[in-house]
Image 1 (cartoon, helix red, strand yellow):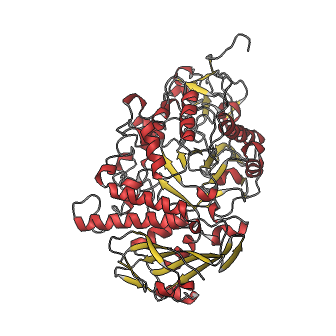
Image 2: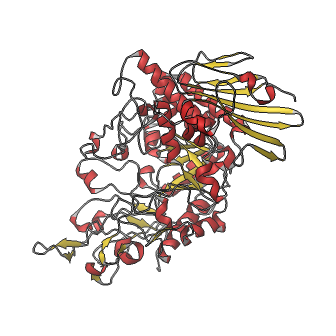
Image 3: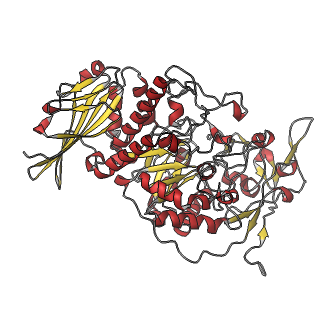
Length: 627
C-alpha cells in the first residue's frame, strides 16, 4: 500500500456474498482484524454493530446488519519487521524439564516487589525478584497461559467480569494489549530475553482450536467475515450452523489448507521471531480432527512435528476435546508430549483414601508406560500434574469437596463436578490445628509423588506456598483476588516452600528418578544395568495378584549397578492411617541407605528398616555400596 508505514492503523472490509444459510458471511460494514496482524490497538466493545446480522422477528432468519463496527473493534497496526534476533533459549533436555504454569496477569498483580505500573504485564514477569524466586525454586520452563490477543465474552461483560485465562483468541500473532503498554511486541520480547538470561524456557499455551467469534450467532470480527466456510467447520447438512467440538461455539477446520497454513505461520513466528521455546496446545485433539474423527496422522499434526523451523520447540498436547471421540490421551505422534489427566486423578484418589488405587498409582509412578510406550515414546511424554489452571489449586484440593463458583455468575453449574478432593472435616477454611496439619501433609504427599515420579512434572504456580482460589475450580472469569496469586503464603509457611525446593533439587540430582526409557525388570545401558522392583513392606516382590490386597503400602526400588558400585532410590509409600515399617535390609544388593526426603517429621531409618507414619511418603537414597 503506497505511503503506508509503521504505526499505521488499519482493518479489512471484505466484499462478497452474504448468504448465512449457505455459511457465507461477507459484510463490508464490519471492520475485520487481519489474521496476520502483529499488533492490535484499542479495546473491543460489545455493540449491536459487531454482529453481521439482525434476526427477522417474523421467521428468525438472518438479515444483513449494515451498522458500521469500526468504532467498537481493535485496529491492526503496521509493525516493522523484527530486526535483532533473540538468542536461542537454554533448550532444557526433556529429562531435566520441570514445567511451572502461570498466568501473566494473575502471577504479577499482587507480588510485593513489582511496581504498581508493571503489575499484570509482561514487564512484571521479568522483575528481578520474580526471576530470582523462580530460579531458586528450581523450575526450568515457565508455561504461560494464553498471551495471544483475546476478548471478553459478552456474558462476562454484561456482568462486569473479564476473561482472565485468555482462551478466547482474536489474533494468533498479536500479543494481548492488556499485558503491555505502548509496544506489546517489544515488551514480550524483553520479558522472554530476561527469562532466558535467567536460564529458563518460555512455553506458550496456544488455542488453535477455536476463536472468539462464537457460534453462528456470534460477532463477526475476523475469520467469519473473511471466509467463514474456510476457517470454521460447519454442519454438512446445514452450512449455517457451526460445528461445536470445542464447547465454545465454533471449531477451526484443521482439514482446510488455509487453517493449517495459519497455525504453522503463527507457530513459526512465535518460535523463530519472538523466541518462544515451546507450545502447549489447548484442546489439541481438534488439530488432528477430520470430519469423521481424530487421526494421529492428520496432516496438521504431521506438519507441526516435521517442520524444520520448529525442530527445537517442545510440543505438548492437551489430548482431549468435548467432541465425539475427543479423549485421545496416549495417541499423539511420537514427537509430542501430552498432559496426563489419569496421573492427576490417580494421585488425588490414592492420597484421599480411595480403595484399590495402589496398582494404578504404581503405573503412574513409573511413567504411565501403559499409555505412552506403545508409540515408542519415553516416560518424558507423560506430563504429570496434580493441579493446573483448570480446577482446584492444591490447597483447595485438600480444603473443599464441592466447587464454589458462584462468583462466575453461572449458578455454580460450571467447572468440574468430580474433583477427587477431600476437606478432612470442614468445608473450606478452618482454625482447627489437626485439620490444617493433615491438609499440609497431604499437599506435600501429592507434590512429593509428582516430583519423584518418572515422566515430566508440571507445577501450578502458587501451589508451592499454599495459594487458594476460595474453592473456585473454574476461575476463568476471576480477574481479581480470587484468581490472582496471593504471595502471603511464602511468609505464612516458608518451610513448606523449602520442602518443595528440596524435592525439585533431589529430582535434578538423582538420574534414577528421570530414566530415559521405560524399564521392565532389568535394562542394560552404556553406564550400567538398571533394575526396578516393587516390594511389599516385608521386602518381598509384589505379585500381580497381591496388589488388590496390598492396596496402600509399597516400595518402588530403582537401582543401577556399574563397575561394582550400586546406586539406588527407594520410594516408600504409606497410604494408610497407621505407621508402617519397611524391611530395607532385604532390598536387593543389600545397600546402605540415607533418608533423602520424608513428608512426615517423624520418619525413622535404621540399618534394618525404615518406619514412616501413616499418610506419608519417603525417599531413601544410597550412601555408598559395593558388590
